[in-house]
Image (cartoon, rainbow, N blue to C red; front, side, top):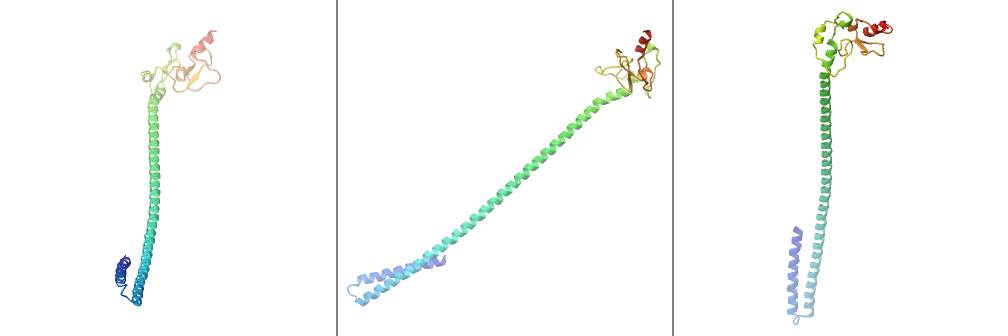
Length: 225
């Protein structure tokens, strides 16, 4: 910048000197001798030569300044492009991390909901099956007095306790006692038997008999025949 200002100032001085020599030559051209005219013309030519040299230096300085500025601009463009690429890469990584994190949270939430649903379903089924299981285990019935069979108990539960327990109206009943299925049961080998299945205790059995077995009602009918 200082060199440019110096050249500009020096060129202005040379222009003033050239104007002064040119005015002197024009005003005194008729009175000057040939040698004096040649001397003034030579001074003017030298001044123009210096102006040309300083003008070339000024142009060269301007070109160097332009190249320097252009070099820095290109460097800034390169740094800016690199910065934008790094910024986009970080944004992509951040979005990928957010999406994977949200997927993981959704997946974990879905798994928790599935586990909770299974637990609720299992608890509900257990609550529904518990009364039936208890009913099957605890209902012990007396033998039907129609055939004179003695009343029996099963385990430590008295039959009166079993008879007092509620019965599901939709659950099928069996045996001479017309109660639901519980414990060990045996099927009558008479294909026309209207009852088909009997509780061991109601027909006085403790183990399964060998061969064919007929219920008391079917046995009486077979004896009549």
